[in-house]
Amino acid sequence: MIIGLTYDLRREYLAMGYSEIETAEFDQPETIEAIELALQELGHETIRIGHAFQLMEKLVKGERWDMVFNIAEGLHGTGREAQVPAVLDIYNIPYTFSDPLVMCLTLHKGMTKRVIRDAGLATADFKVAESLEDIVDIPFKPPFFVKPVAEGTGMGVSPRSLVETPGALAGICRSLFEEFHQPVIIERFLPGREFTIGIAGTGAEARVLGTMEIVLLEKAEKAVYSFINKEDWKKRVAYRPLSAEDDPLAAQAEELALASWKILGARDGGRVDIRCDENNIPCFMEVNPLAGLRPEYSDLPILCGHFGISYVQLIEMIVKSAAKRVLPEKVLKKCA
Image (tube, rainbow, N blue to C red; front, side, top):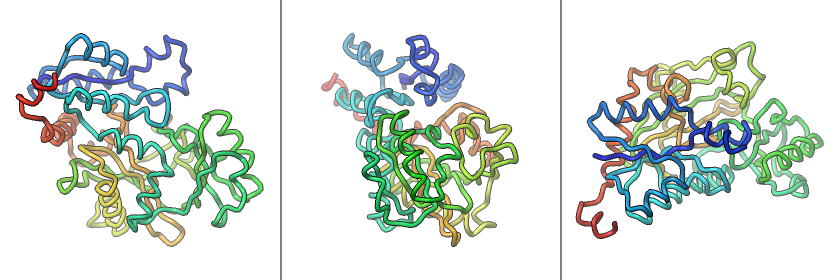
């Protein structure tokens, strides 16, 4: 297939004047190179497209691809991860990973947890606060855990996110409102073990790739898998691979993660984060349907490496899942 690549290259946005924090989720050149090389090794022809604006320019010029491998995060709004998929849907061009509905839903952690909760799956109690007026009468007891409602890569998560008393909520909420210009989600803090679980596939064909436990080391910020801990993970975090056969809690976490992935309608590949409460009950935290793919740095490739899945094999699984949505050639011509 001829596969186009859509992505947000961090250095391009830095050159345009955006800040380090605004571009924290964006891609490094080695990520694009690694995906491109993997696709070529799998026998595909690759064409670099770039970010959403560059995609639209090429589409207007008449360029087309059999599929687009999309890792573009987008920049503005809670629908930013849905922008490239939505544009590709207009042109009926198949693409990897989830559709606009899932991308919009899952970026908003409060909306996602409502769906999970309504499906009868375990997740911590929570409240979304639009302003300081909303942080009164929290319907569950502290300690709380506070973060922006629609950020990834741990942005906005720090030791301050763990709030021991209701009276201390205002300070951290005000700070997050001012920095991220969006609502915050206040959750009941989960003090137990934390797992990230890799998933490949779509719907009934989705399966667990493996589970890693997030273990904070001595140099880590305490109690939370924070932005700083993620950025400096080699010194602060140990990723411990777990076997569901040997660890019953990991087995429960994998069952919850897979059920969550299917309920949310996520596609092709990604990660689900699970953390246990004080009674060792695994609870859904959030899903990443556009997981990082930077080799030897991002959680999903690291996880796959622990379970004997090479980077090329991971990319192959993602493409094979997405390829099932490739339309017959006559339909593509009609829509082009």
